[in-house]
Length: 213
Ligand SMILES: [Zn+2]
Image (cartoon, rainbow, N blue to C red; front, side, top):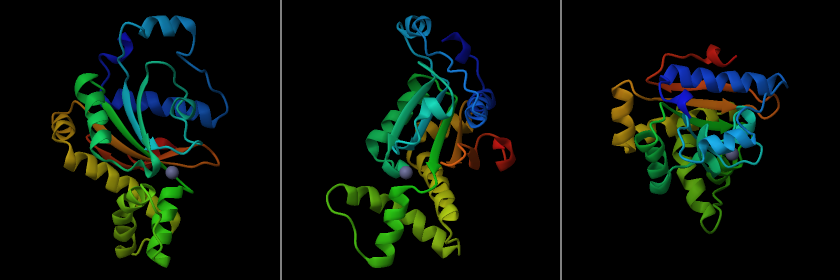
């Protein structure tokens, strides 16, 4: 627990990237997954990052970043769409648990992004609450199209950037932390085939796409 107490946003991001590099290389260390860690974090949690990602089963947070118990405060929805409960959960991670980093994690071949694109093309929207998910992705697809970015990777990157901006626009708590240099928000696009996560947006942290390579 103590290791996260003095982490800067940059430290937290480096910790996350280092774990992803181990996973990509096929050399995971599976840190903090044993009984000793379980006992250590029982009294309280001090995760070093909030991970807000898509619910896709291939995007398991602690696996792809090679972390363990008490490391990540994870919020996931299909297409990483954010309603009030999601915003409240992220604010809890940042304001109550003092996480210095919020990561928005999208991925290629995302069903929610694909459904939003398809709905715009053929005019058929899903029924039930799936429709709510798709409708929350639609503005990102429209923005990408308006900018002439129509490739699936470009649409995904737009949706991740849009999600980062949405979090900061909707959450005063988060925006204040970023303005004060106490937290950063980074948008990552994850590639299912090789497990790599590339930076497509960063607020409050000076990182480029090269940082994730
Ligand atoms: Zn997805």
